[in-house]
Length: 287
Image: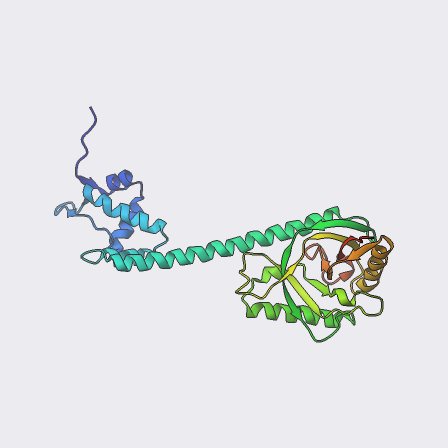
């Protein structure tokens, strides 16, 4: 026959029955969350009523909802639990958890972007080779400066700092600044006219467009060339334009110059930085 369980439980029995530690029960007693119902006058042993298990259930449940023990104590210390107070606390926790999920989504997206760049770095063709590649649509946060970043390294580095400062105004996570890129508008894609005063970072759609001003980087077919001569991208861009013209292709968008191995490059030795210059194209139609 099964042994009948007494309603009067020692601290060890109470802990075992409710799958909590003895230390936790002692701490709850110290906080005034849950105290033994009886104390033996002679031995000073403490005993719980089995019906107090429901209080432990409430404590464990609310802890799982991310309420602190102090918040739970405030709820339980009232003669009757305040439904309005509980609702406000749970709504606050729900909002905090949603923000945490959002931040985790950002981190997940950042890791995905880094992995994508590392894959491009590992699979890239020989430097100087022109290849045709497809890229999906993406969004970008753009900073427009007041100078031509082709002029010298100092201006480019200053532009990157200004880009990060502009990102901070919109509370954009810093990890988006990994692998920055430059934008050369279609209308200046001709010899002697190349001018770059826009730097950008890719931003995931997780950031709502109504919160942060983004532009769309069109998906499609791009002619690409890879190089490791920082601030010499101009001559590679000209090579790319000439190749496009020779192959009877039409330029249909802006040129993008992006680094693909920021994490792999030694920052003090910038010759290790690999750049990808890409221009969106389509076949020309002949009547």
